[in-house]
Each structure stands twice: as C-alpha cells, then as structure tokens.
Image (cartoon, rainbow, N blue to C red):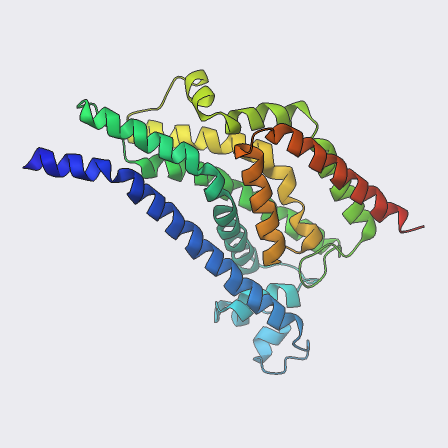
Length: 290
C-alpha cells in the first residue's frame, strides 16, 4: 500500500511542480501590479502631501517605515531626488527581487521540470534526489543577487537625477546609451555562451557533471544555472529603465522576449534581430537631440 501511494505521488510530481511554479509566478505578478498601481497613484499626488501624513510627504524614514502599502512603496518615486535611507534601499530591493522572480520563473520551468522528472526516476530506482525546490531555490537566488545590483543601479541613476518619478529614464542621452549598449550585447560572445546553456538543458546538465542528489548540491547546481541565465539576460533588464521600472506592460514584454529567446527555435537569430532593432532605437534617441 505504501509503495502504491508513493508511486501515485511520484506520477503527480510534474503536476505539483507546474502548479507550484504557476502559483509563484502568479503571486509575484499580482504583487508587481499592486506596486505599479500604487506608484501610478502616487505620481499624481502633490508633493505638498494632500492625503498623506507629514512624514510620508517629506519622505522621512519614520513615515515610510509605518506603511508598506503600495502607496508607501511608491513613495520612493515621490522622494526620488533625495538621499536614500536604508529602508528605502530595502523597499527598492524587495521590488526588484519580486520582479525578477516573476519575470524569470517561466523561462526556468523547462529545467525545473527536467530536474523533477529525473528525480522521479531516481526515486523509483531507490536513489532519491533532493526536493526540486532546492534546485529552483538556487536558480532564483541568482536573480535575487542580481536584484541587489539593479537596486544599486537605480540608486546611482536617481542620485544623478536621471530618472523620472515613475523610474524611467528622464534623459535622451541615458536612453540612447542604454539602448545601444543592450543592443550590442545581444551580439556578443558572452551572450552566445550563456544563451546556449539556457537553451539546451540537457547540454548544460552533461557539461556540468549532471544533477546533484544532495540538497546542497542541488541548490548549487540551480544557482549555477541561474548565474548563466543572469549572464544571458542581465542587459535586457536595463530596458526597464526605458519604459519605466514599474510599467507592467513593459515588464511583461521583456519577460515574454526572454522566454522566447530560450524556447523558440532560432532564438539566437531572434536575439540578434532584436539587438539590431534596439541599437537603431538608441541611435534615434541620440539623433532626436539634434
């Protein structure tokens, strides 16, 4: 009876993993939408603080610490051109981390499902793997680390007065530089090398010694895969500063493109064509200044 129950559970592990990934993605996207709505509302609130407490209107640490609603998170935009506090950095980091999880989980799904499938077979052979969550957790850790760097980039751009209250580029020069840099990166050898690892899960597994059975090894293997994914897609995330960091439509477009690069046949050509188009857009931004 126990063996039958175990076999039934193992047959359903794929469904369990898929449902879990969908739930994770859905929750993070709902949170992104929640923050975006709050930022949009705050962008139309007078800086004098109509409808806000004095502390929040002035952007003090005390005011922000008291409220973690979308409006409070969005108040980062309202105090954009003022020095950041530790709490401001923490709120921005949470925003970026959630956004990265929501954007990148779909593109990691094929590898995560492959890990679950191999683990199921190993369990049937009485050589069980660590839970799939350890591998997925390692992958997402790579993007959380990237979120910290993205938060630092946001802070630097805000300090240089280059972002609008909606966290989009307020400078044609900055927009042109970002677009051209991202477009050129799409043609580099680093992009090619990292994208190949992401496009071919079996090649990645074979070239790095196969899946690890223990929890720590599975986590490290997921982290390694995530770092390759960061190497492939980090430049594309800079495009968020063009359309607005909390522009939900723009976030969705980038997430769909990242997924297409990895799963659509001829994804490398798609990457290069998009790169050329982005370079042209950057040149247009610079030319529009004359």
